[in-house]
Image (cartoon, rainbow over all chains, first blue to last red; front, side):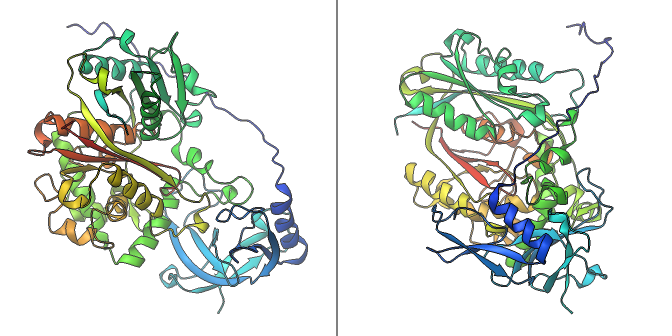
Length: 153
Length: 381
């Protein structure tokens, strides 16, 4: 059978979607970012039913599905639960590779925060190592107010 | 559960860039293949479920745009945003409700038309962590590192998944990346995000799958070959990666247990003849097999080395070549269902598992397998 489209030039149409959003952070995330910005304190929310402390904080305990929660300060230090060293300049990355992402469980928290890990020698990054939050001098109330997590020693 | 069956399947060829076909062209092709396979016409379809994602399609309310190509005009049509296995679950529920005798389910995406990294980055929470720039590949690399750390799975074992699945794809004419490669080729390919090399990752793909589900009465009415649905379940985990036990797939274990129980399968390993699991990355095939209960926790890599999961192995896994050989997002899981249907009908050609009677298909939605859907299918009623 002859393909009647065989000689048709494949056309492509280049476009994009760029929609600005203005998200209300909610009072819980708002309080979390304000305490980092103003006091360099990392706050979690503890469920008064299961005693689990969530960082980043949640308004409602997703396990118990109830809102009896209280604010607790957690340590800026914790343990590296997992990490990856991104080598390819993926389109989503706002900084140059290599970029190290880690899940860090802060002392006093039961969940891990996702953030950058900075260790001078990448061969020394190990699951289980102790890390501490490095706060930026210029803080604006976003997740970037923490520059990264770096070794405690 | 009342009896229901998959009575028609249609899959397009999976390609890196279907430059001559629009999303609607792909859907039209898959739907017509499924109708022809089921020996039905569009008039025999009582209702339609489309599965699509607005970001991948680059349009809002993408489910409405795909209705025409799915033959949904003047029919009851609804949609699922997520993997096709979840769309099929909804389609099955509609048949079981008694309101419809047949459901057509479609799932499509054209990964070639956008930038996957930006789309999957937008799956992260905009307040807490999206701005860090993580995407699906880097998130799964983080999960892979945790899995490897906990189980002792080696880079070589992960690489063997890639070697096996790209090798299987040589027998699947619809596959995008049939390849003869070695463990060394995988380990020497570009390190994208430790521990995932390029050949540990599935490619960007275009493709569509359509499946027709019918109740017992309608299943044998048209002359196609029904494959019976014996167990179906899905389960979701927490949204935030840091809330989960990231090296395990707790939600998959729960979904699989429920599906096996529905299907009255007490010993999955001895009763399941073939599995198609969501191998978006090499480590995932191993991790999912363990979570499903088809392998002792942490031992899938060792079993793979022993040849258990090859086409001629004890439990062939992804004989079609899997997603590592072609991964149209959204359609990925529905293709797993369609591939198991082929196996149970004895129509899988060069990658047919001899005597396959029962099979399991698996779909995933969300970052690092947040949500899992399991289908147990049987050639016998």
